[in-house]
Image 1 (cartoon, helix red, strand yellow):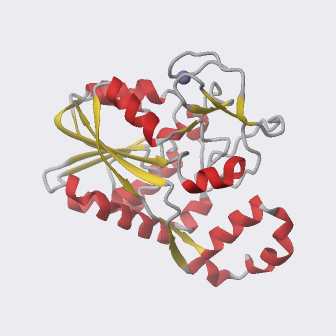
Image 2 (tube, rainbow, N blue to C red):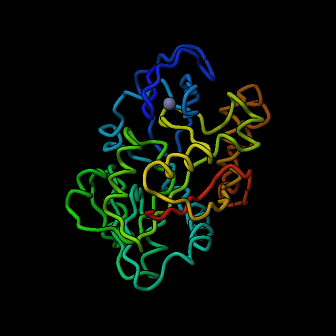
Length: 291
Ligand SMILES: [Zn+2]
């Protein structure tokens, strides 16, 4: 398969599962779709990507309705509050923030009171309506392309767990760069395929799923930025907050043979109200400036 970064033709798989047969992709953020896509690692530039690379998901994202996410908004809030603390030093009362992939507006609702301007763009129109209604946020159903064509410059750009979903992440990164100036700051997060947990779990790594097209490492991203007029200022480890319920449901999906133990537990409602922070050291926030 042709590498979308360096065009090298790759013949070997990094992880090969059974052939992908699903023609219905579950693109919800909380997706539990178990079937994993075969992954390829480019021998030239080390990019890891999915064989579903050329299927255009962006249109499908427009129709996403994620009730499971809405149910778990309380713990998403805690997660984003924690993330916001980590990036606080890069924003201030004068900041004009663009959040790419603002989803149901949870992060936006935390950022909005702390900055001058907040704008969110998001493909799912259900999520956009929710964010407008519940958080009165300035959000629009637009692609990165559509939005960047309309604006002059970018100040603070935030993109949380989005880059791995994009159809053309490298083009998008360059377009974002073109609208940045010396003062702009671009913060995005993704999982790290070089992390201990990703290596330990190998092909069973929980972030390998159909809707994730790209699987980055810190060294790949650092390289990419250096070659594309961007500079990595710092990386910050992000901490995941989850509910006991979500965690058990996820494990049940990954390890179905544990169903007889976990099944009854996942019917206990109050488990949805217990949260815990889990730091597997595989989620990173990248803080980037223009060179
Ligand atoms: Zn490559």
